[in-house]
Image (tube, rainbow, N blue to C red; front, side, top):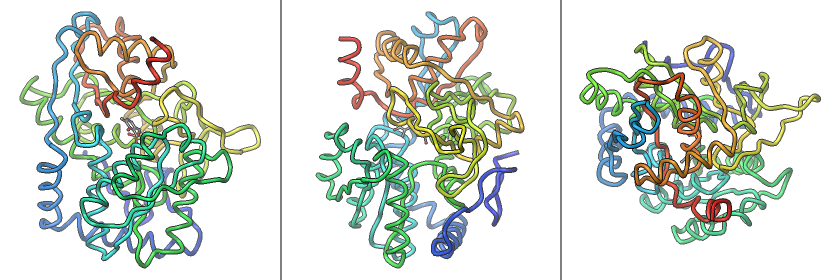
Length: 384
Ligand SMILES: *Cc1c(COP(=O)(O)O)cnc(C)c1O
């Protein structure tokens, strides 16, 4: 069993769907149609594969962590998405969407960003393909992430502040959707995770399935089969679903790791936000709560609908870790392996490290979704 095509309704069990204003329905339908055609077209795949190889640097390696494994008593392997161009898995998705946009005749990309990582990746793809790019970013995040704002500008993108609500990621998504409604003839909305209305959760998953496909073949070669456990951090859930997709049909346990302050699967209840139904952090009146996490990339109150489905049917499970555990894992990997991780994938390692007694003797594959350069200044204040 591979992960299923959710069909025209975009449902993963009880979750997913397309909860959008009337004006956006045709845009979502056109996008779905274009994606289905592209994804079935060998020419699209060969163009995308070429970019992933020549531009993004794929395939990403699988690294055995000898010193870390010895320290934990667990054999740890890392899928090195941190070595991709722009420093994370996000490039897989934006290259796919930018190619698709070009195929649809769109000349302009809009994107949302929280910490700036997806905005930088989108601006990168737009520069590569000679497209106009507008990135919506909460006013609060713009102030916190000046370096990434400048990066996007260097890459030729315009960064527009989202001034409503809490002026963070969820408000930037609302603004990007509003822009898309008004400009749909010329514009593609390049959404950054496996969330939003159908076809995004499915399409973004397919663009990240390259992670799982590569990792599966690498594990077959290195280990003679799948590892005992495959784990990844979960914000919206795109890097996790990308690596899970290569192992759903095996006996491997699939474990998503959420921040304790943003555990949508762990502590959320079903609700609708940004176009789809999924587990969601809400207050007692059904208002969306703010997530809080040391890593801006996981600071999202929702989660992709397919994760809610995988949790409900018991095919994946979801753990959560505290900021303090993440800080410890960040140092641990740096010290033992010479790899400074982004704070997001440090969540997955934090879980392995905390639960190492239970995992003793097992083989664990961690998706190293990004590198830590962006987080070094913040860590210097905490650890320095
Ligand atoms: C954006 C980001 C994440 C969170 O997004 P997902 O969709 O949950 O993968 C995780 N890791 C890194 C390095 C990121 O930049």
